[in-house]
Image 1 (spheres, rainbow, N blue to C red):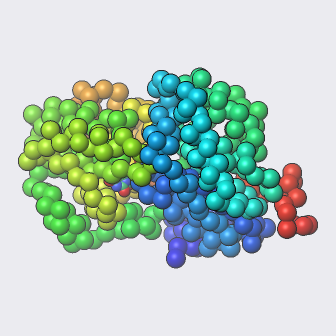
Image 2 (image 1 turned 180 degrees about the vertical axis):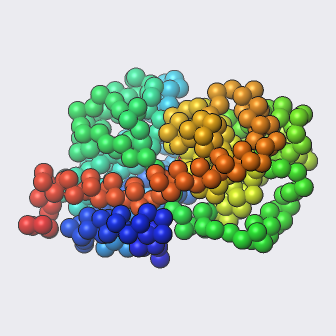
Image 3 (image 1 turned 120 degrees about the horizontal axis):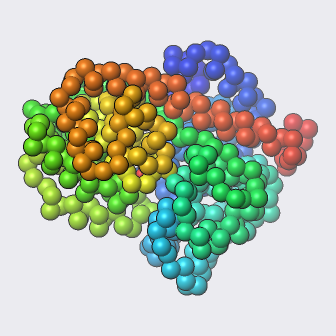
Length: 404
Ligand code: UDP
């Protein structure tokens, strides 16, 4: 299992010792995370690694997911979209389904932990159904630049009961009568998705899925979601290939809490051709191999709380062209360690530029890797959580932990 000490090679022994010291007062605390899927999407990706690292620090950290019917997840996906700026018809029926499914989950799950971390809007109303024994934190991973106002004021009735709110960026800050903190997400460099791979391993994975490597590879790895703009990626690729021969691979998945994904995937089928591969495989090693072998990775999102895929590719020294949106603006410094683009034409232009210039790819890729080493490795995120948990010591006498 990965431990804090494993990070020493990237962040130095001083950081690791500091993290171990901060974890000490929290030893034997019982903490739970609640979200709505074990699989698919960045939240599940972060939780699976973060929770193991917390446990390796001696903090008993668990993970529950809430269960829901398809209509529940259809409503929560609409909420997700509306928090990113879409319209929503927030009918009484929708609110009733949302609240009653969360209530059923509250009956099933006995949360008497020292600290409770609730992720995103799906489980948000859980807080109504427990007697708090310690702090409850709402961790929202969504781009909150322009949330739908009606939805926001409804959700605020739950949010205001939390002890703190954690968002990805300061620009997502809202007027909330609770403390707000800003933690940029991070990646686990030791996971199957991110660990080093030999050329043979990469070749083997690509060959396994019959991915041609005779021409440069342009890749986007994303949930099938319209905010990821898969159609825009295909259009940009079609413009770019008129100037440089290349192959596009769109690798995607559908999270279990996302009922829209299958439709998006099906709508892309008409674009399939010899040099446009649209794949859906549950294979982290394939993600790793593609991000490493790609000449250019795209993440042409129109909205993006934070793009883990951007960080994953940057870690592999691959230049990324990202949509000029949300968290991506904090991951990529335009023209330095990647490119930010605001249109299909701009994306096409940058693809051509990078494919024609190996030196540029190498320089940007090297800087990209350095950026991730400095700012986006999981140990930094874990340290921020430790600071937050320790800060509650002063205000909460946690049940069962007298005098700590
Ligand atoms: N992912 C994957 N397979 C796919 C598509 C995505 O494993 O076919 C992973 C991707 O590598 C990343 C996560 O899902 O770890 C997506 O996180 P991101 O923050 O980029 O976007 P989100 O889906 O949370 O909006």
